[in-house]
Image (cartoon, rainbow, N blue to C red):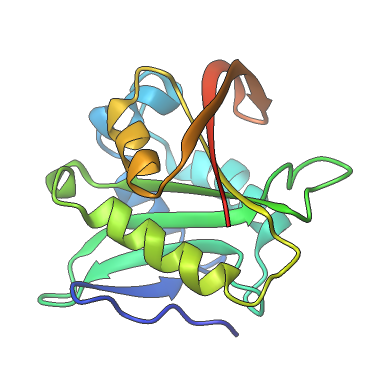
Length: 180
């Protein structure tokens, strides 16, 4: 199983199908959910019947694909998570050369550089032995300036504005990408 080395401030553990409570915990703040679904908190049923089955489609511990919980080393506080998976993981033809990264952190930990530090650590470790991967991509709602700021810190550039559709629904989104 691939592991993510600790940074100066953070440690990482791959979530399993038994970690519904950690996903649920982050989703209980309307501000965290604002750009995902208009601010509606996830129910445990949402986590168990939507999030976990989606995660099962791309969970691959050997290659590092999945959702990585992020904890602060100084006190082991659970900050949130970073996901990494093939772009189009839920289609008939997932990308082999383009990997999607995303994050969700508790509001108490916003604005402290944790998301960009964690995303960089996860991307570096997961992409290290994947020469077929040419791009690291991220998707956000255009108004989500916090996430777009993280994308830019990762060196990503704006690619396009488009109508994104997945099992959660359809929304106007922006795609950012960096060559790796």
